[in-house]
Amino acid sequence: MASTELTGFLRADGRKGIRNGVIVAYLVECAHHVAREITHPFRERGAQLIGFGGCYPNDYAFRMMRALATHPNTGAVLLVSLGCESFDRGGLQTAIAASGRPVKTLVIQHAGGTRKTIAEGQAWVQKTLADLSAQPRVPMRLNELIVGTVCGGSDATSGITANPGIGRAFDQLVAAGATTIFEETGELIGCEDIMVARAATPELGGILRESVEKAARYYTVLGHGSFAPGNAEGGLTTQEEKSMGAYAKSGASCISGLIRPGEVPRNGGLYLLDVVPDGEVRFGFPNINDNAEIAELIACGSHIILFSTGRGSVVGSAISPVIKVCANPETYRRMREDMDVDAGGILEGRATLVDVGREIFDLTLAVAAGRASASEALGHQEFVLTYKSFEPSGPACHPTYQ
Amino acid sequence: MHDPKLLLLDPADNVLVAIQTIEAGDTLTVCSQRVNVPARLTLGHKLAARAIRAGEKILKYRVAIGSATRDIAVGEHVHLHNMKSDYLPTYTREKGNQYGQH
Image: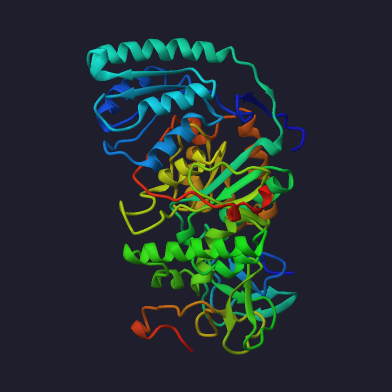
């Protein structure tokens, strides 16, 4: 384990990346096709597509795009604008240039339309990929690594195999100095007291409780239920037991802080990502699917995502590799190519929780060292970003920074 | 020691999780005791790992997921008939909108 030698790409802000991709980013849906065509021939050589579809301005979307474009796994960025959308392309270009990364902006209306922009963009991506391949790797330590976790396509096995297995791996990562992030406050309803007891300070405990209460209010307005009768048939008894199944991914470490999308935690430890917008309910569901949550974890600096699934999700992500931890042994046998870890072995006496936790920990280090995860090898590069509104977090959210 | 059909998620827990279907009439080892299971239990359901007193917290993942509403014997099924939420009442289909209060 400790013998796995990590190396990374050193960025101007001192962070290190475990990948070195060229990110092609469309700044409105109207530029999506052109950006996709630019990326397509290079998609197996490190070019990846991200973007924001909206035409109207949104601070959250800008901060997310800036965080992703200056993420340590991002080596260079090509911005593709139609020309008349409201996204602050100049501000984004300036922020990327200030981060020391190669960056170029193409404006389709100025470049002369679809074909000319695609040709110009492809020429830039080709040259930039060649330039990036000459960048050296430097030694990287575990306390420079950030790992996020999410669950999707959950079933009755998720809470007893994959999620507690990820929790064990999180405990090992935190003990080794790494930073870990869990999220989805809406799935933590009923865990408030348990979480508060794990907070680094009483003040942070109060903030964690408020974040779950905010999620409960938000989901109530949206008419989104929590404990369904089917849950009891699957053996679950109470709201707190159901939430614990998801919460088990966080392990047992002290909770060091609460972060908002785009805020990068420092100093190692375990952080809760508050994904529910502030203020009145606007723009619909906080996260419309698993990839919206993954994009936020990556915007908080996650180099790797540990994804727990029972029914069998296949998604990966742009920018950071996704490791699939499959909770259900039947799903694993049916969709083996898409899975990285067979946590369901716990149900068949082939493994213990301790074994699965260690396997996830070891694989996390191997993927950090360059091994492709299953979704990465299959070419998955899903990405989605929608409208949201957040207030910045206050100093009490980060008691360990003082 | 426990039967391999049962999973102890944390050493502090007082319940075990069935990781395979356990048929009515099966005899299982729970905490080195032989226990007869009177009714079928499916994946995800819980059994008492030791005797639990009424009012005691039910511990799973080392945390309280509710409390016992009556004394529960070792090996007994732990579900809505003998435990309740400390957080909010559980809605069940059978009880309709009366909620699963005992």
